[in-house]
Image 1 (cartoon, rainbow, N blue to C red):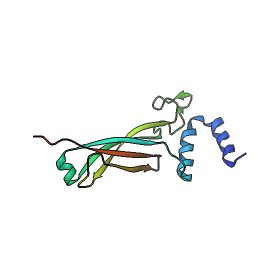
Image 2 (cartoon, helix red, strand yellow):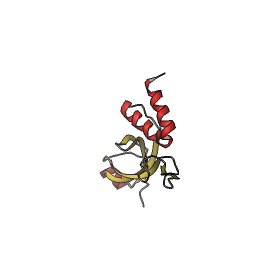
Image 3 (spheres, helix red, strand yellow):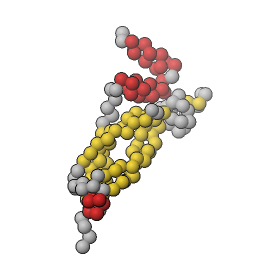
Image 4 (cartoon, one colour):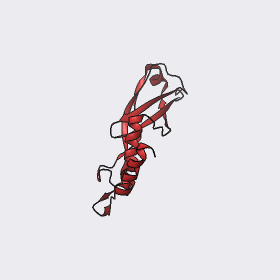
Length: 133
């Protein structure tokens, strides 16, 4: 039996709703998590593409439910905010700096990390709108 299996059993029996939170903590500590890549597209005018631009981008992030603290319940009632899962999704706004001279179709990646949530990998594709005549 691996050393983490005994701990998983204790969590599953006593606090089943915290399993996702504990897995996120373990993955963050060990650097194992890879939930895929979230893809987004940023539309720029030709002028913005030439000069560079800062664009707000909303990224969905999973975190421990603030209402129940990750337990999934409040006394004997199931938490209505997270539906008993112990975690919730919220939207975090980041400001993405697009460098000057970016071309249409360019892509770049970044990772959004927080101590309270799992990391999110984001790939941004740049779409330069045609110039108005």
